[in-house]
Image 1 (cartoon, rainbow, N blue to C red):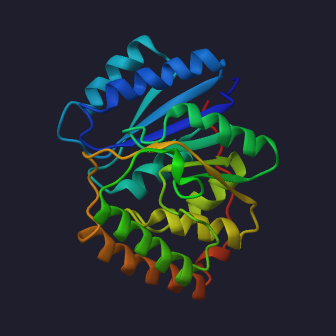
Image 2 (image 1 turned 45 degrees about the vertical axis):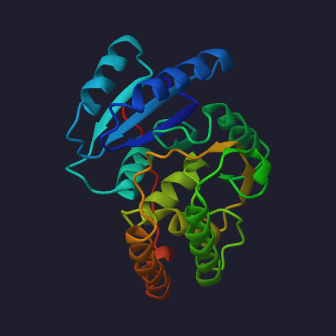
Length: 252
């Protein structure tokens, strides 16, 4: 069977309010840009109507499909589940609030077409593109965590945490099969794996707007992510990221 060229993965946990306008915007983008694409919403054990809303959208838009996680496993698990089930040759994930407008996906696709294996959106390469900035305390903790991440992981990126990243199918299959972090700290692990496996990673400035309804707590989740950074270093020392992976066959 023919497979879509593009796959867009959206992790979702209790997103019945933010998801409908997001899916509408994505469908408009696909139509206007004539993308042959699938949209995968990964329901991470939501207790609201998230799953039902996705089913209602899928009934009128066959590009949309729903994947159910086995309970609430975390954003990292949800993204991995969607990326490994994606059928496209270009595979990306974006947050359910579309903090980076879906129109920015074209810039990531252009970077992949130009030879990058991984293209990551960045809020900090061009700060003028932040249309609604975070509160000062969130900016402070975010930049501190990014600085620690860059120092510990030796990652040469201005922004490791932006939830707007794209991969070739091969890079996605490799990086996400090797991923071990299931919480918020999965982004630096994925980038660390990509570099260690020799993939070309391109950082792209994107428009971005803060959403006050974000579920992340820099105090609580920041401490947890520091422990995850230590886990990533241990994984590297133990050879976890060097193991051989095989491409998962696409569903028929």
